Amino acid sequence: MSDQTGAVAELVEQLGRLPGIGRKSAERLAFHLLRVSESEALALAEAIRRVRQDVRYCETCFNLSEADTCALCSDTSRDTTKLCVVEQPRDLMSLEQSGVFKGLYHVLLGRVAPLEGIGPDQLTIEALVDRVRTGNFTEIIMATNPTVEGDGTSLYISNLLSEFPVEITRLARGITAGSVLEYANREMIADALTGRQKL
Amino acid sequence: MSDQTGAVAELVEQLGRLPGIGRKSAERLAFHLLRVSESEALALAEAIRRVRQDVRYCETCFNLSEADTCALCSDTSRDTTKLCVVEQPRDLMSLEQSGVFKGLYHVLLGRVAPLEGIGPDQLTIEALVDRVRTGNFTEIIMATNPTVEGDGTSLYISNLLSEFPVEITRLARGITAGSVLEYANREMIADALTGRQKL
Image 1 (tube, helix red, strand yellow):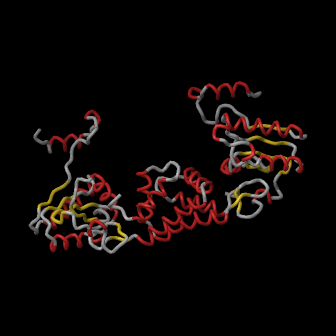
Image 2 (cartoon, chains in turn red, green):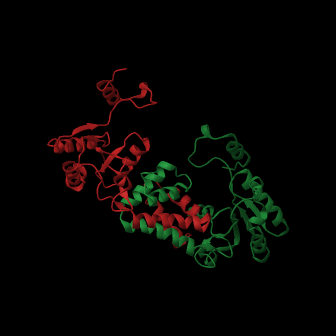
Image 3 (cartoon, each protein chain N blue to C red):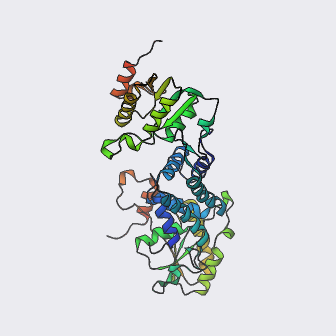
């Protein structure tokens, strides 16, 4: 834009690369960052720098961590007989926020997606098999996303792990708490009926 | 969050302060910034830093500028007899993108908003009056937002400028191009009728 200074145009351009941020939103955010106190604007810049500089993957479970081993893997109060397998660190965060699971995690850093050229080798599956082989896990909970690719990844991994004396489970499926049956789709209803529980 | 490293939590916190970015969006953006190449993430941090370091207000019109005088004020091909008064630099940008106006601008950096404690002294109105006094403007176009406060600000300024031999105009109001009369509200229809033009 001829009326825009280079620095503002550059900031709009960079903000516009973020997912879900269109041109207009990027402009709005850029003007916000110009209007707030300098310290607030620079705090965001610094947070981005720091996260890229300090955060890496845990060597054990591949969760995000600022140390070689993440806080969850270092926590001796966790149940080391249960291992929950998730696709991404953000999935781990969702599960952890529920507070129900007290075991350990393993982050695959993706899912098998042949159409995108993502095979099992690009995930942390080898490390997972090693953990199951050397650990004392009794249950592996597959918590991949309930999608075709997530289900496929879980199936692939459960086949690999079938040689070990562990129970392999997956998250329950059915109707969601607070939802309305009228609007549930066919798959949800089928899952809910198939997995029906005693009252 | 106990499961989040400090740096990630800090980034989520900082992103969550942006307007229109809720908790979930902030988490999504943070994970995006962790997943993209380091250079792309740092380019955003650098753009924020640079915009706060290099961008200031033009000494003449208070548009954003990386020099003491902005590109528009320095442009000798602009019509120096017409001055368009806007609230914010982003309004200037919108007008400039339309390509219709070839004169100069004056950015108020806000509007008179008594309920928020913003009086005329906090805007660049004094500088505006000086420009009109010393310049050779023949027309001042009030392009504040069509809100109660924007209209009030325009009225206040037009009273101040009434002592000078300039014509004071405001943006036309009416139905918007491409809109549907059925959904136009009462004020839009009233503006359109009051300002009706010869076909």
